Length: 161
Image 1 (cartoon, helix red, strand yellow):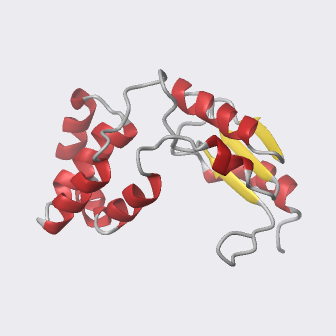
Image 2 (cartoon, rainbow, N blue to C red):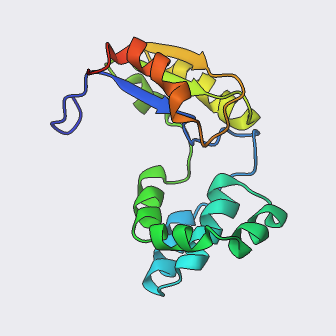
Image 3 (tube, rainbow, N blue to C red):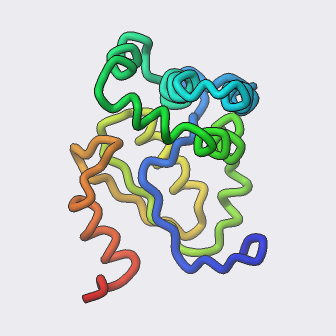
């Protein structure tokens, strides 16, 4: 139980923690940068900062996204979601001691397509006292919902009919 919330089971897809040496870290002031961009009403800047610094996409990948048909959706979703996300994630470091306090069963999933996310999934599972670790080989970060059905049903119990 954490802050009065009783959780019986947790499933996580590619936890976003950044382990030292797996990729460039997010800036220490990432949350402050997101808050400043939000205060200025710069949703495009918020989305760009998220993709480049939190996700770790190189500029040559971000620029086409900004020019693509879905950029407006990313901008619309940016505030307040990315400020809240940044406040929760902090510097995106895995707090192993905090993770060790998770008392319920935890299912950690990844797709095996992004090395740093796979290493992070392994580290979260290793730090969780009641963990199950599974890779859904070939699934990208934007996992297909159908690929999650079997492992989630197996972990949480039968699906409602």
